[in-house]
Length: 125
Image (cartoon, rainbow, N blue to C red):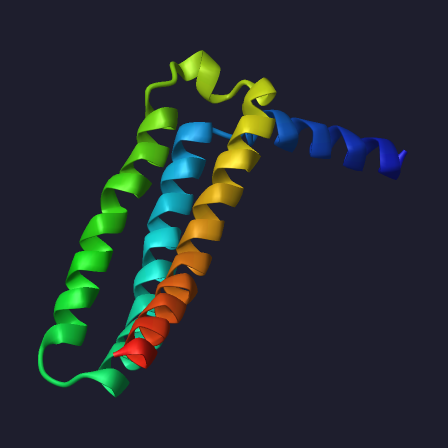
């Protein structure tokens, strides 16, 4: 009897906690931007500062962060246009997971890729 009650409560919670794809993507974009910016500060700017002096590393940080914002906005905009009914449709789960994976691959991978490119360019000069 206790298990049946627990199962009923779990099912009720699941129905009430329907995932809103719009809010979930907005959250991922916000956290992705934070992670991307932190990695840019600690990885790319450090590599640039080792190879040059002055304001160049900080200017590069501003340009790289400003350049990523439109891309993140694109991810968010794709999901923001959903209607209320579409926003909770579980059929969108595969597309959502694909977009989230691409967003996080970019947020984590791009700072390291840019650092590698900068180090290669500094090695040739």
